[in-house]
Amino acid sequence: MGLLFAREYSGRQWLLVLRCFDLATGLGFLLLEPGLARYVGFSGVLHGCMAAGLVAWLRGPRDPLTWTVTALFAAKLGWEHLVGPLPFTSSSLSVPVIHEAHSYGAVGGLAAGLALAWRPRPPASL
Image 1 (cartoon, rainbow, N blue to C red):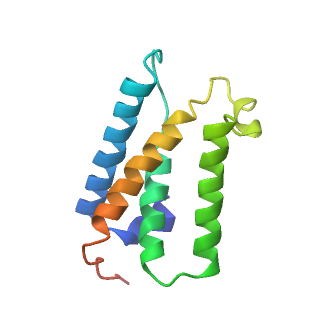
Image 2 (image 1 turned 135 degrees about the horizontal axis):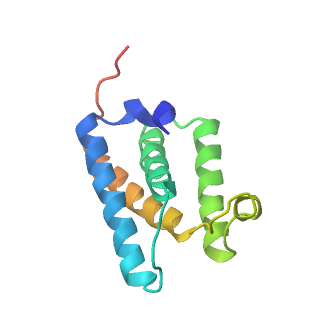
C-alpha cells in the first residue's frame, strides 16, 4: 500500500487515516462481533489504506486503471460480506481469516479519505 498511495496524503493526514480505520475496526469488533475473543493481523489496516488511497486516486484524473482497481476492491469486499473469506485465503493460513476486519478498516479509510477530500492535496514531490 505504501508504494501505491504514499504520496496521496501528507504524514499528518496518514495519521488521521490510521486513527479513523483503527477506530472503525475497534468499534466494529466491539459492537458487531461481541464473541470475538482476539484478533491478530494487519488486514484491517491494509484495507483502510487501500480505501483512503482509492478516494485520493478518484479525486485526480480518472483513468481506467483507477476505476478497475476500485471496482475489484469493492467486489472483493462485497464477496467477503455476502459469502465469507475468498476461497484461497482460508486454506493457505493456519489461523482463521477475520474478514470482517477488512470491511471495518475499509469503512474507516473511506470515511477518512472523504473527510480529507475537501482539503487541498499535498504537493507532489520528486
